[in-house]
Image (tube, rainbow, N blue to C red; front, side, top):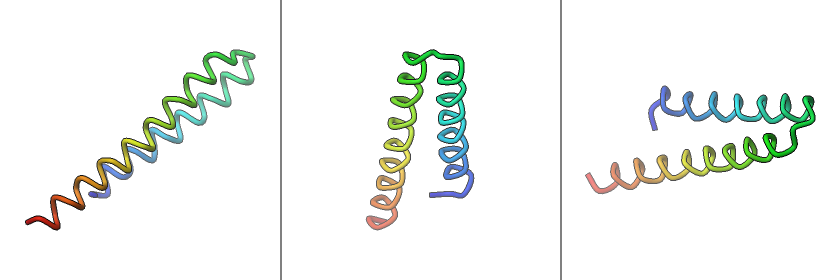
Length: 60
């Protein structure tokens, strides 16, 4: 995986965690739950993209 793509997944995941903390501080638990779910999907998408790129490189 390229460094820029890795950075994109890392920064977006950190932003989602910051938004989770902010929504908890504003006493919005449903919004915090939404951001946690989005965070899990973002991390999972990063692993999926990494595996697909690695698999494609091995087949070439």
